[in-house]
Length: 84
View (cartoon, rainbow, N blue to C red):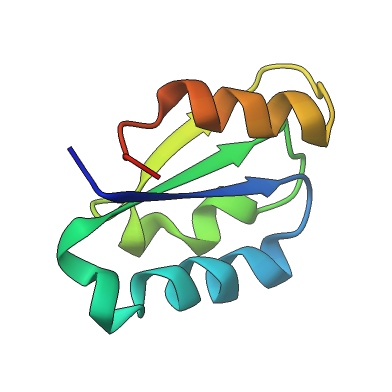
């Protein structure tokens, strides 16, 4: 179980998603106790391809239908195992 969970929601922001994930994985002080969850809210762009090389470090949740940022955040929280 991780101490801290970071949830990153995404909808057609492939140009920013890789940067967000790299920023989260680069948190050196938290590195050993961090969990990163990316929730893709039915993107139609190449968002997930941008983070394929990072996928072993993060958990990816894919929505089949766009549900909005609130539900995407809730999906990430439901899947989290972190204390915070």
